[in-house]
Amino acid sequence: MESILIVGGARSGKSHRALELARDMAPDRVFIATAEPSDAEMAERIERHRVDRGSGFSTVEAPLELVEALEAAASPHRVVAVDCLTLWLSNLMHYGRDVDAQTAELTRFLARPPGPVILVSNEVGMGLVPGTPLGRGFRDAQGSLNQAVAAVCQRVELMVAGLPMVLKG
Image (cartoon, rainbow, N blue to C red; front, side, top):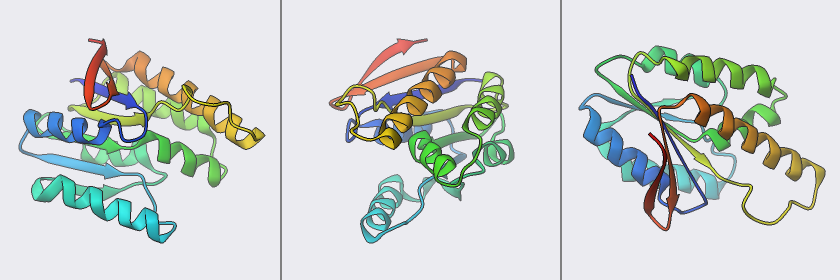
């Protein structure tokens, strides 16, 4: 089965593209959300995403246990969309989880998923160099995560101004 990574900057159309692909792939769809409503603005973003995706998706919240959620949801006749790896990574780092071990588990799963999987991730390394060690560490970890996931996915797209650019597949 196919795994697809969609990367891009903020507001580039990544989430919209993932939902569009998922709708075209299968009528049985699961959306795995990694965001946590840590403040009012984030809660509003989460609600806006929920409204945008409509009722055609079952939603699973997995801010930390992404691989377990994927294993439970993926099947040959169901498409799973994950939004997003960037927030998942942020959560892992915030809670002191082993990012390398979690990345290895994710890439093992994505190399041979039992059903189609679409993942959204931010490309954070194209802007300014972060001014703090934490910011630089996150940027580096996100770049490493994106590279590892892109290496095992059959298709990779870069979203720019709402337009998909195929990088792989």
